[in-house]
Image (cartoon, rainbow, N blue to C red; front, side, top):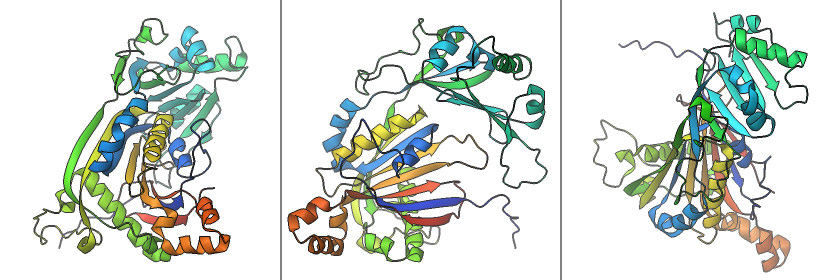
Length: 411
């Protein structure tokens, strides 16, 4: 008998949501408080974005999406905390600009810093916190034993009181120069760089590396996020049967786990989901969900890796969903993996699956019921909401996950 020991730590969790997208999304005023848009904007730091869709759909819509999608360029720079509060960098990027920064380090282990919307977040060990003399609050540790309390300090650097010469601000400067004075590696993204004319098809070579910006004196290493593509032939695609999801919570839980497992294997490029799979069932017991009625389909997997901001991911999602409106049987999946900034709270990633057809097409009974209630066919058709979607929010990639099911309808 083998003794593999026990799993320690908090059980992983996954929140599954089945909802409906609005029929029209205003790019100038996109929804902010409703899923899946709140999930996208709630994750500020992302390192990988995957899009999975049928090859036929990709050939039809990608050229148009590529011409509208802006390129992403970020920098890797070595700086100290005190350098953030100096001269042109502080005035141009923090006071009047809009940047995103994330330091190296492991949440819950190292001192980790991040900057978003002018708010500098410092996660500090107890010793560093006491020596710095800044006001913060204890951070959740998940009930781990023999772990010293850690603290989080949040500083709004855009407040009118955050100026050189002010007593409170000089206290922060002193802490950065005398206690938190190590030079560390940062990832840097500038929202103010005009990227409207910089598309994926025609990207500027080095807008962040110009000698005129305050970051140049720190000698940043500028990186461009490039698209990678992989084609998979004859992938078994299970049917998208919404009746199984909507029937009861227990069935929805099992279906959500199996469908997300299928998506994950496709993104990994596994042969277990292909029609020509010859793996011995003794070695691999996995079988595709509803394999007897699954359809062999050629798929395209797009991937962007780098320091990706949430607004860019939201735009990417908008463009793909908008391009699919004229294709009633189109489907696609958006998979995002985030950079953890908290040891306990926060998400490791999420997956959004845009189902084919409208909600009325996915459920014939619902369509007929809506038409009868409205009394007029045209009125019932106009009252239908947009397409359905499924959302998985992952708090950890450890398996098995605890599934929580929720039904949401966009308004």
